[in-house]
Image 1 (tube, rainbow, N blue to C red):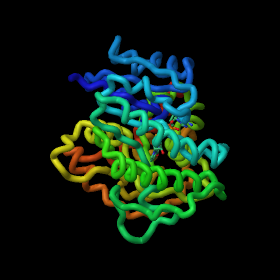
Image 2 (image 1 turned 180 degrees about the horizontal axis):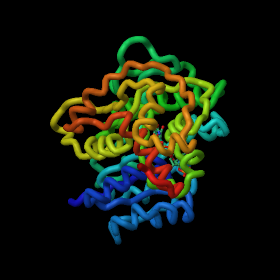
Image 3 (image 1 turned 45 degrees about the vertical axis):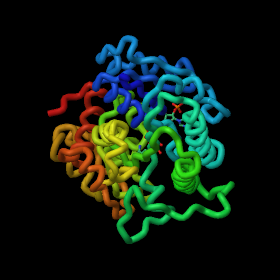
Image 4 (image 1 turned 135 degrees about the vertical axis):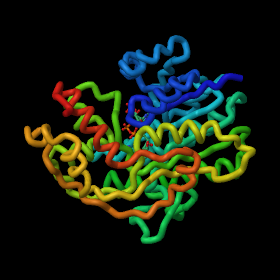
Length: 339
Ligand SMILES: NC(=O)c1ccc[n+]([C@@H]2O[C@H](COP(=O)([O-])OP(=O)(O)OC[C@H]3O[C@@H](n4cnc5c(N)ncnc54)[C@H](OP(=O)(O)O)[C@@H]3O)[C@@H](O)[C@H]2O)c1
């Protein structure tokens, strides 16, 4: 049977790139969005149009992903699910209702619906390295198979959006492990666990969006346009091209081959190098003041990405590569020369 992949989160950085990669690889793609307007945003995007997907691409509108049985009908006939539709810790979000609850509920609801979809072979859930690191990164090396103890009791209030995000990813991972153990599903479940993900984001159609609606790339944009981030962010990174490719490779792994179930990609980096790459690649734009050195403090992490790198089977893309891609997209949207 030809693969039909259901992808969530396609109005976001990671989900959208997975959608492009899946279409480029020739798969049929069904994508879930919260409104007709968001479906339009995806299907009318120039990068999607360029791939001329025709009837290989179809939207499913689910206004509330947390509703009971929300994914029941969307999953019928689907062979693979890639679930990247979950919140990132935006400072203005409510920690409970806009971060913790949707992260945990959408994933468990999706898995419950998946039990009713006989065609399903594999579910991939996008997690984050914070699920393996916990609230304070340990000095020891962790990997995608590391489990932070489940908080007890499960928290219902949080001191910050970031704390809610970390706890939600920890609880989600435990819940999914438990689901596999207790439900013995007819499909396999894996997590893809990226560090901060950076790179060209085809959803960004103007320079303002590049700085405000660009998920983790917002931080990178701060670092190259003179911004100052008040808190450090994890120094573990994945290029968007590699992160998207990894999702698809994990989706099509032969489950009978054994090996790890979860795959994390977070190469060690120090954000102080960020602007050096921009100065090297775009000296004219730096001289014109389009790019200015910002401050992004680094929270050091030790993360073992070797399983993911092995699965990708090729050199992974450097942080410099991601910085140049983002800066290059910004110049392109400003209508400025790149030389
Ligand atoms: N970007 C990173 O550096 C990074 C690193 C590690 C892990 N991740 C994980 O990767 C996933 C995607 O991140 P991203 O960077 O692509 O984020 P993003 O650009 O902010 O996109 C988030 C996506 O999730 C959807 N979403 C958020 N809250 C939702 C809710 N309550 N109900 C339904 N859909 C919801 C959004 O849909 P709407 O448009 O409808 O809001 C959007 O499609 C998340 O699980 C995130 O934790 C990201």
